[in-house]
Length: 135
Image (cartoon, rainbow, N blue to C red):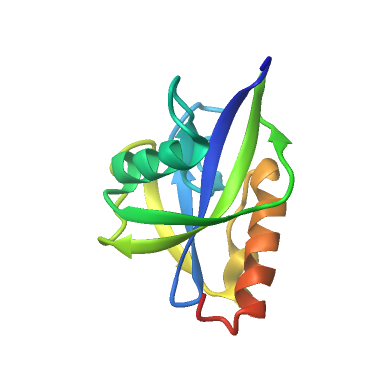
């Protein structure tokens, strides 16, 4: 495999999606993303997502459904996202972020999402709406 995988969680709770504001690198600081990170050797993407959300946000989460598609992020990396249920804990910006926001479906355009996250955010919002908004 030539490209490395970055995973992101469209973390939801009570019909809302979690947005995380980046602190680095400088060209991305202040922009919003779905939280996650790089898959490490020996990990499945789902295992990496659970680990990253624990490290970055201090929560336990369960990846449920892969968002169709993948998007380039930097040289040699691709982003893959999962609709992810919050299982336990209250998210806090522990690593890589300085602010978190729970966004209701009508509020998703209120933050400046990174371009590569926009398709996953839109897909997750549609999926949650199809479930009746409760997730």
